[in-house]
Amino acid sequence: MNLRKYIFEQYNKFTLAECKEEKDQLRSEIKEILAEHSNLDSNCYQILGLIEYESDDWKKNIQCSIKNFKKAIELDETNVLAQLYLAHCYHDLHQLELALENYTKVDKQKLKKFQVWRYTKLIEQIGYCKYKLGNKNIGEKHFEEVLELHKKLPETEKAFPSELLECLPENHWIAIEMKKITPYIES
Image (cartoon, rainbow, N blue to C red; front, side, top):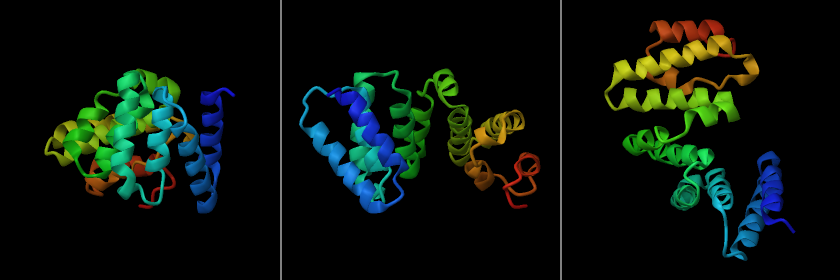
């Protein structure tokens, strides 16, 4: 059995599962299989982090996610998803300095090649952190970049600009323009 291939297959089933019981069963199975192996690679630790992060009890499990994402990065500093999700953990904990520090470590070009919507969201999240940490002008520059990307992207490649809309007043020109080009945003 190719462990990595099997774990990725199980993780794909996990992400597609709609029923909580099925997700919980797959999470347990993945953890049990990986616990049996001592030589886990970066991707295995990334998946361990993700299955805890993507749980109903993510707040309870977030320190475990952080530990696993850090281990994934320690084993492969180019693991862009582990880098990104480590930053997401700190963002979710409202530790914006740590979130920003980790968002800026993400290889943007590699992420852009992987999934442009994730790249766009990363730029927005950096803008959010900057804005909330008092660097409003720099945050707005990031939000402007997100707007320009949204103008060019097909609808299927766009991520909802929640952080941008949370930060900016409704009458800010970027928010107004974003609402014009994003039909699913209520005015």
